[in-house]
Image (cartoon, rainbow, N blue to C red; front, side, top):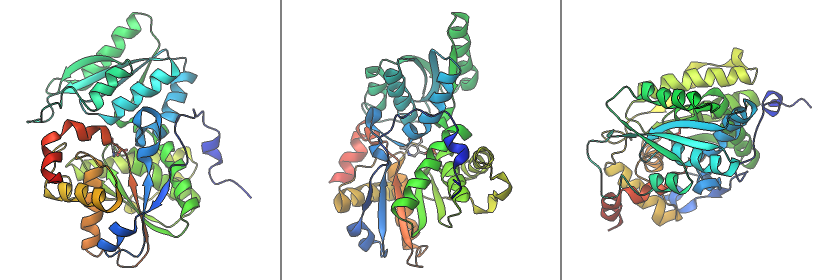
Length: 337
Ligand SMILES: Cc1ncc(COP(=O)(O)O)c(C=O)c1O
């Protein structure tokens, strides 16, 4: 039998994540939402650096960095970036220097500890060098400036894209698509938080290559659904090309659900808070208010709209982000009452 993912197997890859991640039944939450069958794909349990969806992507991006002979990685992200944390942990494990361009000031208001705990605390723990970049400056130029300065010192630099969301990073979610349909071949819907687009792009490209009809709904977490969708289309098409199935890619299959991002990136609303509370109290899950809480709010909202009325199995992906819980003590205290 031919391997539909033969092109993926030929790519350089590091084994960084604990895979396959567990696929759990979520019967109490499923019943509350009127779903015939709800499963949770535990990508918060990828292991390295407290886990999350980026570890899968970094298996491919950092393999490319090593193949290019890099001795130094540069990556940009906000203070509570999960990508930055996972890059820092992976670099520590690989013995590669990690320089993070940490962008400060994206949120108009933050809660006590936001600037020092959660992900940023772990970035430092894993030994990353932190370069502060004000959000309202030319962020890309500043990030490239960090890389240029390191090159001028003789370092061989590899720039990991925002969210590790290039076509190579998306290959991590082709692997996830394969795991999901192996564990749950009857899956009809896959739902998850979507932001820099690599997760959704990889899932779609993987399902396309594998010829599986499951629908993927990315829940916009950035309060920028049109931008997220455009990025999923672009990265997804590139990922499909890497897999040799670009000719079958259709933008029409790309669905990004709007309405559950709260008022802005990094700001929770009542739907986020209800989602975090329900997931915790029905299934013992720990969701953050920035990503997974919004992804779950989307699942709940879509279920209430009757979107899964066909009775098909729904897989919700817990994409990680739990360290961010500790950067939102007021939100978490309010919703935990
Ligand atoms: C915990 C978590 N979930 C979901 C996402 C969104 O994934 P993607 O950026 O691949 O769209 C992110 C991105 O930073 C994240 O950190």
